[in-house]
Length: 88
Image (cartoon, rainbow, N blue to C red; front, top):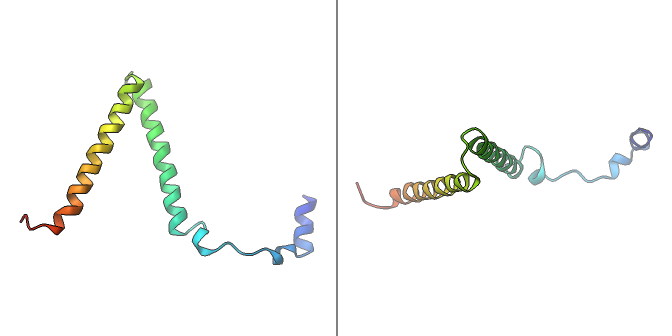
């Protein structure tokens, strides 16, 4: 507490460089990082649900995530390539 009061009263805060906008809490980089952490927590929650409530073995839960990853990659690949082709 004393250090914080001295930091303010001695105006030591003026000598600290501000955080660049690239690393600010509302920047695209930090928002993306937050989304990845939230995704990892959701995946962990789903894994716990599959293994504890559905009683799926751990390898079965991993298989579900592998198949979901492959399917989403295939879908994203097909969707991203469709506008560049003349399939209509």
